Length: 337
Image 1 (spheres, helix red, strand yellow):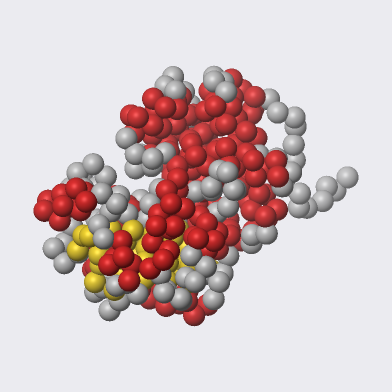
Image 2 (cartoon, helix red, strand yellow):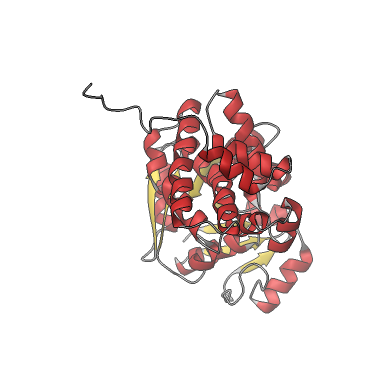
């Protein structure tokens, strides 16, 4: 049994808390808000983020950062991407050398263009940092619906240990050394999911969504390869797997926000309606900046930025994507003549 502290009491943090509790570990969930700790301890349900999912009595809640961090063998960092650095900085003084930190957030820091794992490694260099990602909506993990993810670390032994900690008969975990690729896939799929939602809001069909998913993973992979990631990562769970579920599911806050934008809402109105952090809005600017930095063509990302930040009409963005210069789909193979 491991002592595990979950930093963040949102839907994903609570879903993983229930999973890890069921695996026989002692789990403590931390929140920066004492009133949230009190409410969750008493009511055993997050009615806003994870309604209808009962939180077992054996899971503890605590707002004391030092106590929660020092008492843990493994820290699961489950906060929204805009708060990753500030949260990591707040508990860095209490982290022991080699203590595990598993980042489960998805995003790119806009001003530095660092992945969230790179942010944690910068703020807490003494920690052993890992990433857990894949097609894994908290609403289903919390209800023990079969799910598969990948865990990435720098060292094989750490990946295999954490794989054992998280894995059970409804939560299968694979391992990977490609932390960079896992982080890129997890962050950028949210931008493509916004585009898929916008297409839904415009009333387009399955053909359009399939095109966005397929060309979206091509954009993500091009950027990832340019940054030094393994191309095979983008064919796996944290690449095409996570992209499919985020573009297709109404659990996806990015898709839901996109639907509203396609119907005429502004990005701020859409985020207010969704009532949770829409990671794709924050990742969109960073993705565009990365495409410029690495000289990678990312037309879907470019058009999403134009809709979000330049008041471009969604229908005009789709038309521009459709009317781009003629292209060959893949670089492989040779013509007979």
